[in-house]
Image (cartoon, rainbow, N blue to C red):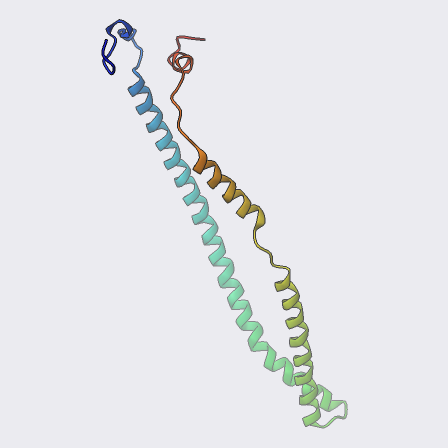
Length: 157
């Protein structure tokens, strides 16, 4: 027999109710596609709810920040006039309050710098992505063995 021609002796008719390999593949593809679409829909729903909560929290935090910023000048004046009531002149009172704010700003700046120095690359994420890329680069499709095909078709238990 010439190479590339079909051997008519290996062809058999499908059993009643049995699906062809093409039908099985099409069904598996459709099921996988439906699963992916359902997972995406679920992720969108969860993210949408989290975004709404995040927006609400962000707006509340912004309003609280504006109110706190509005209170700072009032508290600063109260502190300066309180120092004046203790016997200091008004100029020295405001200078002491301003200096206290500068010391507070310096301490917060040092705290921020210490936090920034602790920031590292996401090592585990990078390693995981590189490992996945390596696996996908080296992946080669292989043909199914006769035993795997028979097992998939239910000929072998």
